[in-house]
Amino acid sequence: MSAVNGSSNGTAKGSGFWLFASNFFKHPTMLGSIIPSSRHLIERLLAPVDWSRAKRVVEYGPGVATFTRALLERMPEDGELLVIELNEDFAHYVRERIHDPRLTVAHASAGELDRWMERLGWEGIDYIVSGIPFSTMPAHVRDEILRKTRDGLAEEGEFLVFQFSNAVFPYLKENFDEVDRGFELRNIPPAHCYRCRADGA
Ligand SMILES: C[S@@+](CC[C@H](N)C(=O)[O-])C[C@H]1O[C@@H](n2cnc3c(N)ncnc32)[C@H](O)[C@@H]1O
Image (tube, rainbow, N blue to C red; front, side, top):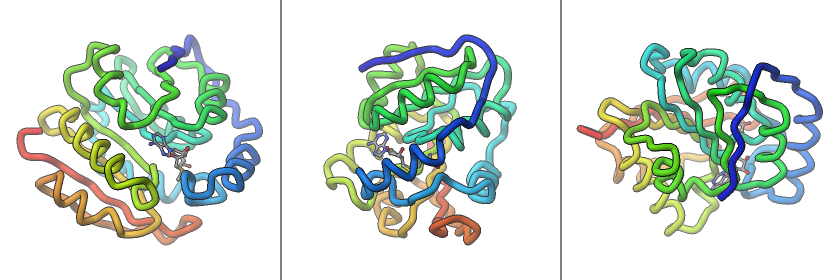
């Protein structure tokens, strides 16, 4: 586990596009797309968020911080954002490029959510946003991440997911009481969107 907290402002985009594309050729199944998410996908996935209660937010797999920037732009000043990224190049990129006191960058797997919550002293998360590729990871890893995600959500907490196939849908239904589905065509590739809630999460 390793972490860094930001300190002031700054959201330079730098070479994120090329870093993302070159990592796609190294780890195609971990990324699923050759380019970062479009603004249309970001708007659609984040549309249900009530920003006034987005105080503790987690993002799985920030990549080159396309969602991270959008989250920080919208979150309240007293909010906290934990991003958990498995790829060291991307974790390093986010640490170097985004300096915001609300942000913690974890170079780790989403399956370590519980350890990070303990480390930060968090009891419940308001929103977890994710584009990690559930359909290409081993089933036991997927199941562990979904279980820890459900357990980590606060009451009224929501899990907002995008995927490039619908394969995860049955597993979301297994772990959450309500799962709403949508689809965003204006992304490469087009993406399935899910909004998941658990009764008394
Ligand atoms: C489809 S890309 C999304 C990147 C970025 N969020 C975006 O929307 O452009 C998936 C990201 O999840 C990361 N990832 C894959 N498996 C992961 C895991 N188990 N835990 C954390 N991050 C993971 C990849 O390294 C990659 O950055």
